[in-house]
Image 1: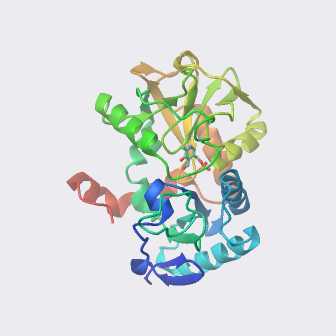
Image 2: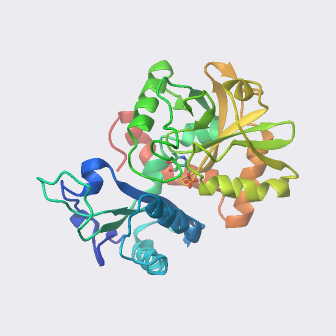
Image 3: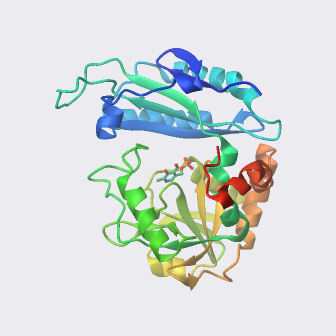
Length: 319
Ligand SMILES: Cc1ncc(COP(=O)(O)O)c(C=O)c1O
């Protein structure tokens, strides 16, 4: 199996050579915009939608990465080509496209705007990233609403996909203290449901798939997959404000995110959602998606996480 290739500022380099400078503005103040994208059957999934969001995030932050979206798309295709021989035929590629304003001088105080931009791409191995999600994908995951809240759009708009993630990380740690298996489900400052630390959150109620409004959340590409598949399931897709009460009384609930597509959520703050087991709508969504992309995301996850399960049980790093 060949070595993985990364991309940094116009050059493809061996992955171990990818380094970020300590005074990169992205490292220094977290001002990195990024995307996590993956392939299915080695075909990039909704790449243009991800890049549209990346460029929208840059526009909202008044950042220009020095590459057109067409150039970024071309480089991404070449990145996939260069990495396709690094994985097994039944596996897929996942990676990040990251952009920051570049490397500042250590003494500078900002606003950090006159350097060559940092643009990099690096593979995130799919098997190791899914090993901690497999149990949730198969059996459903509990969610806990942590004390830490999502940032309101008026401070740092979650629609911009960025690496300023202290609140997600803290929320996840708080949730795990309540239940070591739980994922965090963050509410906004009015107590409305927003999203998880790395996934959108949706419920199923009375024949509709319901998402929080796209106000205080990242407008996920997988959430768009779900919206597009809803008519095929004969279901309405609705966006509205959701309170914890709506989740507690839902028929089903699930997370949606690029690495795994959808993951059933079976309880909230210790209360069972629906039957407390993965429900039929999630199953039908997964089947419809598998038909569309030609890969069954859960079956694939089972297979590609196998080599890492033992490492995880031993508590060692999965790669
Ligand atoms: C906070 C947050 N919400 C939602 C998502 C899901 O977005 P997507 O479906 O585009 O992967 C992510 C993905 O990383 C995320 O970080």
